[in-house]
Length: 400
Ligand SMILES: *Cc1c(COP(=O)(O)O)cnc(C)c1O
Image (cartoon, rainbow, N blue to C red; front, side, top):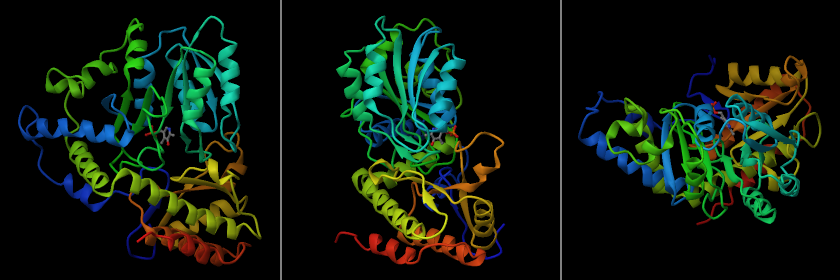
């Protein structure tokens, strides 16, 4: 609880801020799930989801969080004993790979650490070495939310093609879809997964799997997919309940309908541009603070940074004190560091993250940065000056 009154801001990388329109859309009685308006509305979600993913492919909706979408995607394309290649750039890459292991797949890991993007050349080499074609999928995070690195998915496709390898390309877009430019079809991504609570601005609880015809071919060689995870009936339901393998997540669907209305109204290109501008403002402030004192951005090169989340290091004792201060006195919650140290190592407390995904505008970015500036001042943490002015200068570059 904050002692300040006013509206609180959960500036973590998901769940993201929910628009009032989305919240209001859920405030209604339960609908008839057997016929009528709910059925018609559900059908309208699919083209709009595909608009956000930039695909002409297929979309399946699951009642799950992102981990469920991870498992759903893998369960449709892997037999036990198949191999997957994971070029990991943070905790979420390792997490998805562990999911594949849990399904009986063998994981070939290329670990790029936590502060740089993956190198497609290394992936190409690994695929060239796979003479027997045992690797069935290259799985990668577009944005790894723990490190806030953004990876080159088109480059990964080029690497697979250059190696002349038949593996499909699967992308975790949970932190990036609706925030960072993502072009599923143009970039040659075969399977993309996302979840409701980040760029899509809906409460946690829906997972989405997008897949193309190449992925359908991969699905055809899988001996057994559980009824619940099978994407076939969900993407091409003959009767309504097949969309969700049971009762529809009614109020999440109302929320999603409204969020997609908002995305359509703003336009996906404009949304990407807004996220880029907000991210540049945050980087400018953090780079200014970092001129003197302990704050550093985890990803040094701007070209490899996410536009939706920024991972920072400030060290001990500042990290936990700053997070506590802004939580208690500024109505602001920052994200904890994730995957930046060994579990149990208290140095991990010296990291934190700013979430700036989804329903976030200029005054919220300045509020986030201003809250942190107040925390720095209150705690007397050494820092460079001019951070807020640098952020404002970035935000002032609005066209029109
Ligand atoms: C949030 C996130 C996940 C996990 O999603 P949950 O809904 O917490 O299961 C996985 N991958 C990435 C890149 C994420 O940002």
